[in-house]
Length: 327
Image (cartoon, rainbow, N blue to C red; front, side):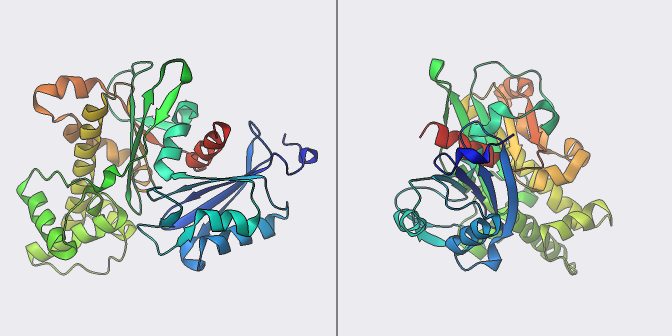
């Protein structure tokens, strides 16, 4: 059990900030349990500081010594401007405003990667492949509001080195004529078609609309990726089902590319909010076929296991704590 008498000298605020929700948690010190998890919708707060203030005030524990924020954004300097939300802030200004002794910012998928070695087996669902090779590189992708990409590289006795990049914004790897149709439509709309433009919530919705347009069909009332999934899996809408299959195929291509790039024989993990909600249907989707469809390297990819992360609590919070452990 956490020990409140240890005071605030070791206490930590942990956060996992995405384009839709900000998840906050408390940790009384290194190695202590992560408690008091609360999800705040980003759209309800003008700034990140407002959301932090509400969480800390409602919790009533005072100001923590250290803060780690995993955020869906590249960390390239003091100024942070989110890619898929309007929040922007200065790290030094936030640290000074609250009086934190330590403030650590890291990409949300870098934080999730740091948590991978500690994920229990019951929070993982394997989708194809064999056994992971111990000590080999690990890949990580995840679709939600955006498309996150990271991984872990082995570093001998020092453990793991997490990747901090923006692989979700690589150029979309279209293969079929229908995928190229969607890619061209997205390029007309956005000027460029990255993998995130399909492998995300907005991507599923845009893909559905473009397929309906190409087929001369009225899209109906779908306003979100969840609506498209509902139309596909429960109503049997053909364009919705194709959009969902196309999403899974593209995600498979991206994940397979990552596995080849990293030599990820330690396996590939899938995070984010979309795939876990697809449940067992995902296993029969085109994902695994496209993951392995790498020509002469099909055999290598066929052996690599893929796991869907099914954790109810954001593992990136644990990764944020790990980042403070090594800070």
